[in-house]
Length: 500
Image (cartoon, rainbow, N blue to C red):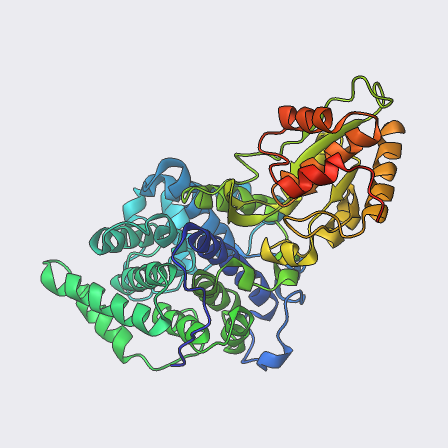
């Protein structure tokens, strides 16, 4: 097994948020990438790419039942806590109401054991008893959706986590092999979230599960199942739960990065979407959200279905998301200037940023923030950040997305926390903003935090409109707190207009 050493090492809340989000999106992207290759033989990994079309006739970037049922379980855990009856209800809602699917577009084929379990749930069988327990019902249906038990239960004791993995598995798959697979997977994911290497995560999972099974009565069948896992050598990507576990694990543990893990998982052939979903959850939990290629993340359908659930998950580590903290634009009053009664001028911060800084941990969604700007009537965003800051805050795609979605983007990069290097060009930009507001536009100014560079720009607009330096700075600070705090930027406003 090849161990990777280039994953994030920090154990701060930002890194944890990245790994939590990475696990969910990693599962969904892996599932959607594998769908077109399903039920075929082994594949040349070099030919595997996101966005292919094939099996099921679904549009590219569409996850299958694997992703939908995983989201159903995540929604249940985040909404009501650990309650198998609700887990079963949401799984039936997927079947009957097309819930948790992109555009409510329909269902994919499912295995016989899951189909029987959903039928049992619909007929009133308690969720904990709905899954079959015979030797012919050892498919991967519970393993493909178990990931949220680890993500939401990451702080539980090992014994509690194993118990919940067993119970959640029993909703569709009650055989000890399936329960053991789910327990091992959950234990490994929690270790990866904590920064453990794949080798240590896997060894720890087997040692922990084995110790519990041997120490307590009633786990004899689980001890036998664990021995089967230890002795299993096949890696075919087939639906049998032990083989699915090992195919996904080896695809991940032997990979150089997230994309390599998905291609390796699909390369086995057969049940490619499930193998890639299971491996994708591991890879996302290990390398984090931004290890998933940007074009794969942006190409996913149904992001509006998954994003609120991902937001709820990362809010659990203190992250401010677009869901609970909608983007604000602080409007600057224009009374007493030539712009009174025309458009609007406001200050905000960088849309979509993912960053832990002065204002706390932000894990925002770019599309949601841009929709918020449009909802507020913003016509133009004047952005002062450099390209390196877009990379640093994980929104390098912002210019392209804004070009397609709006509002109009005007960029004038200013090094943080400095003043403009070209004062003459900066004044020309300020005059353009004034003309836009005068024409009735709503202009918003933004830097990374919406404080010093943005506040300086608003104050310079006031100066151009005839306000004194003290009045300009005071007006901005009165309507946007913690702005223009740096002496160099205050001096720049006082020396307006710039001559060089």
